[in-house]
Length: 285
Image 1 (cartoon, helix red, strand yellow):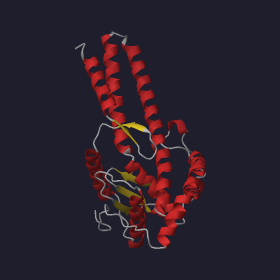
Image 2: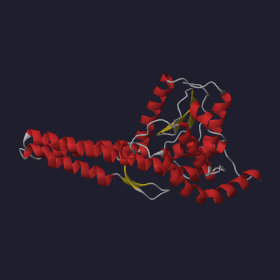
Image 3: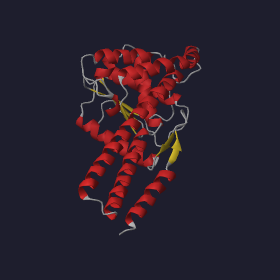
Image 4: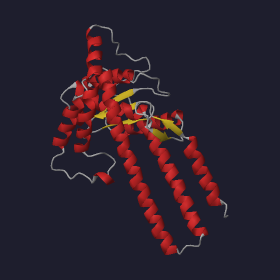
C-alpha cells in the first residue's frame, strides 16, 4: 500500500510530460492527455444533447449569416484541424453568449446576434469561438482537471502514510483543493484571452475588421451595466474592461491583414468556401 502514492505520482508525471503540445498561433505550451478524436467525440455528444434541450432558431437568414461568417473564418485558420467537422447553429435565446465544442461545433444565441451591429462584430465572436477549437482548449481544460484530481489523490495518500492528524489533513486537503480551483480558473482566463488574440487574427484573415472586436466588447460592457461582475481572480473569464484593454493593443496589428484580405475579396481572388466544412440542415436536431 505504501507504494500507491509513488505509483500514482509516476502516473501523473508520465501524463504531464507525455501530453506536452503547443498552440501554433501563440507558441504557448499546453498539457493535453486526450486525443483530437476523443475530444471531437465528446464535443459531438455534448452538441447533440444541447440541440435536443435548447430551441434552435428557425430564422433562415440568421442561420445562413452565422454559417457564412463561420465558414469563412474556419478557412482562415490556415491549417488542417484533425476531426474538425464544422457546424454552426443559432439557438433561440436572449442570452448574450456563444460557445464552441471540440470537433468544430459552434452555437450562437440570438441575443448575441441582436447585440452585434455588423458582420465584423459577429466575426469577432466567431473568431474567438473557432480559436477555442483550433487551440484545443476543451481538451486542455479536461486534462488539467484530471491531473489536478490525480495530484490531490497523491497528496491525500501521502498525508495518510505520514499519519498526519485527520483534522490537519482535512484542512490541508481543503487548501489544496481551493488552490487547484483557483489555478484552473486562471487557466480558463488564459484560454479566453488567447482565444481573443487568435480570434481577431482569424477574423482579419477572413476579411473582417479586427477592430470590431473592441466595439463589440464595449457594447457588451454597456449591456451588462448595473450587473455585479465577479472578482476577476475567481472568474472563468477576464473582466470586460480587461478584454477591451487587451483588444485595443492587439486588434490594430491585424488591420494590414484585414485590408489585404478585403482587397482579395473585392477583386475575386479570395474563396470563402472551406473544403473541410460540412453542410448541415438548418434547424436539424
